[in-house]
Length: 318
Image 1 (cartoon, rainbow, N blue to C red):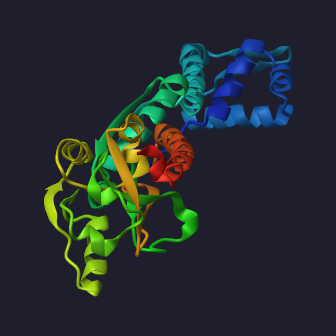
Image 2: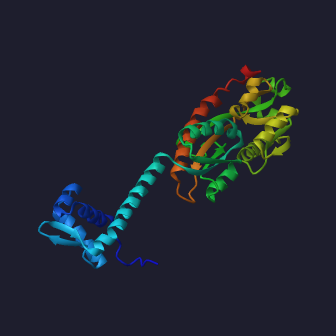
C-alpha cells in the first residue's frame, strides 16, 4: 500500500523526462514544450531526486538515457497516455452524459411530462438511463431527502408557500367528472357545492388534502370523499367509469377532455391552484447526467404551463 506521506510523482516531471528523452536535448525539449531550458532542467532534476537516481547522461552534444532511464521510459509513456485518456473520458462524459438518473414525479404530471422528457433524452443523451417513480409530494420530498431520487417534482397549494421565483409550473384545479355530469352544468363551482358530490381524492398524507381540510374546517364544511387513491391512473379510471368527481389540473386529463369522455368546471371561492417545484437531492452531488436531465425537466415543465393554462375555459370542452 502506498504511503500517503511519501513524495508523489508529478506529471509535469514525467512529461519533461519523456520529451527530453525523445529529443536527446534539453534545449530542443524545452522549445517543444514552450518553456525555458532552466525550467525543464529543474523538472528533470526533481524527478531524479524523487527516484534517487540519474536518468540522463549529460554530454556536450545533449543527453542520453541511463540504463534506469531506458527501463522506465515505456512506463512513463504509459502514464502520460493514461492521464490523457482520463481527461478525454471526463470531457466526453461532460459533453455526452451517461449513467442512471432517478426522478420522483407527481401522478398528475407523469403522463404529459415524462414522454416529453424521454423523447428529448433519447435524441440528445442516449447513454442516460432514466428511472421515474410516480409519487405524491410528501413521498417525493422524502425520496430527495434520503437520496432515493436525484430530481424531484412536488406541489404546493397554499399561496406563497415558497418564493414565486422558485416555482416552475402553476395550474388551476378543476372539478372533473364524466361528460354531462350534473355537478358540472353550472360554472364556476363553489367549494360549498362540492360537499354534495362524491369525490375521489389522493390519499393522505397529501398537500392538496391538507389544504382542503383546513379550508373546509374554517368554513364548517365536510367533503364527501368516497375513495382515497394513491395513483393518478386509478383516479382517472374511476372518474371515467363511475358517477364520481375529482379535483385535477387540466393537463392531467387533457386527452380525456379532448376526446369528450370527461368534462370539467372551474372552481371559485376559493380558486384552487397547484404550484409545482423542482428540486434536487442534497444527499449526494449531482452527476453530469442528472444535471442534463434537470435542464430538460425544467424546460419541459415551463412548456407545459402553457398547456395547463389552455384549460382556463373548460366549457369549450363540453
